[in-house]
Structure formats: C-alpha cells, structure tokens
Length: 486
Image (cartoon, rainbow, N blue to C red; front, side, top):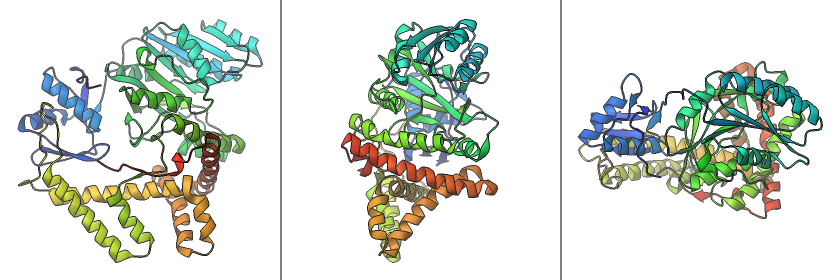
C-alpha cells in the first residue's frame, strides 16, 4: 500500500542513519541503502532531524517522502498514545492457568478500562474457576468443549468482536500502564495492519532458566524496532501481545497450525500489502519459562513450525539470505585462502562504490528523492562504500553462523571428524551465538550459564528444524536464497 504518511504523525530520523553532503545523502535503513535527496527534500528531512520528533507535514510531497523513508527504515514513527481504548476489544485465549488469567484480566482492566474483553476457554480442566474469574471481572466468556488450539480460540473471539481494533493478549501476560494506548497510537497510520511490543520477562526471574529467559527469551525481538517482514532484521513478531486492525486480519489465524499461527498471520498481512510494526519502545511483561523441560520444549516446537510455515510461505524462512558478493570473501577465508579473501573484500568495496556512483534508480514524483542518487562530485563515497561492505560482511558472517547451527550442522558433522577446518567452522558458528548473547547483556557473570543454555537451545532448535522439514516434506528451511542488502 502506497498510502502517504499521516500529516500529523511525529517522525524522527533513525539514530543509526548516517547523513552527509549537507543533508542530501542518507545511508542506513533496512536493508541498508543510500538515498539521495533533492535540496527541497534535504530541507524537509532537516526538520525531522531536530531535537525531537516532528510532524510529517501537510504537503503531499512531504507525506510521500515520509512514507518512502518510513518503509526504508530511515525514519521512525513516534505516534502519540491513543486517548481512549473504547474502539478496542481485548481477546484472551486461555487453557487452565486460572491464577495467571486473573492477573492478566486485572491488568487489562487497569490499562484498557473502556475496552471490551472476551476470554476464550480452550477446554480448561477447571471450567468453573475460569468462569468465576471472568464473571468477577466483567469479561465475556466463550468456551470450547474440546481443545482446538490458540488460533481457533482467538478466531472465536474475533468473530464475536465488533470494534475496529483488537488486541490478542495471552493469559500469562501483564500489560503495564500506558502500553495499550502507545500501541494503538501506531494504528492511527491507516497502512499499519498490526503492531507488537517488546516482550520482557515478568520480574522477578526465578532460577537459572528464568534468568536466562529474562536476558534472551525467544519471544524478545530485541531493542531495535521497525517494520516486520521476511528478510528484514525482525522477520516476525509473536502474538503474546498483538494489536491489530480488524479489517486487515480478516478471518484471523490459521486454526490448523498449533504452533506458528502468529507468524503465519504476520506474513499473510505483509503479503497482502499491510505494514506490521515492531514497537520495541513499548514493553509488556510475560511469564517466562523456569523449568528446563519447558525451555527445551518451547524451542523445539518453535523450530519445528518452520516446516509447515514454509509450505505456506516458500521464501520467508530460508537457512540464510545470500548476497554472492559478500559471501565470496567468507567462502575463500573458510577455504584457507586469506589473500584471495582480502582481494574479494576489495572487489566488493569497489563494486559497491561503482553502484553508488551509478545511482539507485528511483521513480519520479517521490517528493524530494532524486531520480538518480549519484555520488559523482560528492565526497564520502569511499567511506560510505567501505562502511556498507563492512556491515554487510558482518551480517553475512552472522547469517552463516545461523545457517550452520540451524540447518547445516548434521552434514558438516558427518565430515568434521577428518576435516579440522570443518570442525573449526562448527565451533565458530556456536561461538557466534554465545558472543551475540554476551553483546546483548554485557554481563560477564552470566556468561557460563549463557554458554550452556544457548548451546542447548541451538541444538534443540536444530533437531526441531530438521523434524519439521521431514514432517512437512520440504527442504526449503535448509537451503539459502539469494537476497542480501539492496
């Protein structure tokens, strides 16, 4: 959807974007790219680069330019909180967990006082306890007499809702004050079909597993927000809390999927042209796992869902996305040819520099964007090219590590016993995962637990990925696809 950005939406330049050439060149976004602005466009962006977020502006050119830069990840939206939750229905699926349900509904009542609330009991053993909790809190109750799964439970409430917005909230979630209004604020943009917050562990963390989950939960999509789609840094968001536009999600979830139904919904929204946003600035609290059995079961189930999901979305979840020019240096280095790898890095930088000189072709009429983004006669081209290639090489290395851990480890292990270089690749792939955890927390005291639990989680996820592929009769999650930085 090419709807111009709302005129009143406050926006700001993403802090990771590099600005040069008197504001006429912007380097950054997701995927990382170079954008050239006209003088008029540079003046508009200068306003968005101020000390705080500024409204897009009422002119059509400003609104079109803002949309392009929002979609590119160059601009970030800062919508004001919605003043009311009267147009919202909160949907809570539950099976057992009455104490958590009561806590969840109490938080909903505090933070969404005007919203309708529908609880769907997916065949809890103690139906009377769930009914009593809902009655005491004024929530409408729908009960399934046999378990039909979270997707079917959410759909049952969706069919009974009449408001323009719905919020899917799991029963083990606590909504903090202000979170619903801030999430609803993102839906003021008519092109946004759904928005999700950052999922944090409900304090206090209990035990080694609880502490690790608080630091590195699989539901936590990280501290950098942005648009969600396959191939982006955040490719999906969970439905632990998901606020959505009722008209965008249609019939809702695929009830045949018992795991991954939320990922499927997000990818279908993206495919239909809706924007899905991850609002990392909004935290919600979730009861994370504290037992090893639950910790491993979750990671196995999540990974196993890749097979069925790939049958529905063939290119959405490959082993890695490959940019051949950035993969070549890694391949040469791993083959023991450092000089050739260095030459390949130089070739990649020169090639990127030539692309920047030639310009990224853009359509006319984009409100402040040059048709040809040329670096001819503009300083900083070498530095921009070098920085882009360095980031691309780092991302490619991370992608290789992920592919080895989640897809390629079994065949590599089969030959590793007689090939020291392959053993080194396997060790490096798992070391990268631990380094990523360390960089995220910067807590040396947590390192021993992180090494053990991250490695265990990766091995469990590897087994789940392969089982899911076998069950779904697909190898797509085990294969790379072409598609690096644009």
